[in-house]
Image 1: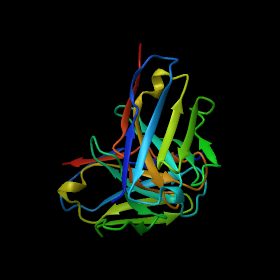
Image 2: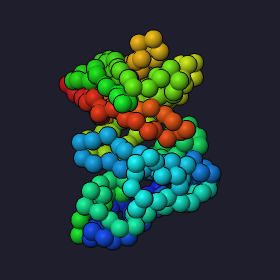
Image 3: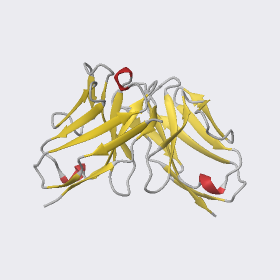
Image 4: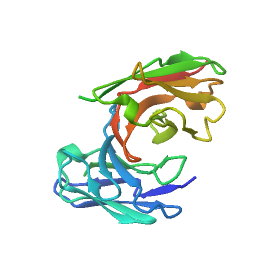
Length: 107
Length: 117
């Protein structure tokens, strides 16, 4: 199974900060990667698909990049509603796999 | 509006069985692949199983292969997960999710399965 390693596992940041989360795949997956945001007690919400395409109605401060094995999710200016846990997911191969998550909290 | 509503969760003893359902509405259910994803308490997301739009192709995580069976009824707009030989480590919130290109664009609210004696 393809392993996805997210870094960091957690981070603390101020409102207005630029935040970058990385996701490294154990083998090349092209652009078959998605990013999700999850808040406590809620299901995940799709933010980015195909590594860099912004899902409809997701604020433009979110962006994704990368291909092959190295990917990144960037929040250009962190807002109060962005404090959550973020997951990457690959859909190049079965079984589908998720990263272990990055928790973003308030500094 | 797309809605996915899971049901069937609850408390079950180790070795027991449970069947989860996911009622879909607001989209052409028969046209889209679907999946189950679970989340153990305080843990991350784990993909469990997926099924093609027509129901003829299924895939499973190694952790559930041979114990869980995914199926769908495109006339009833419902996705199922039959879970047998349940173990404590299967305790989780189970989400059904609509698969788009490979990502999951809609998720249900989840149903909690607790495996304990």
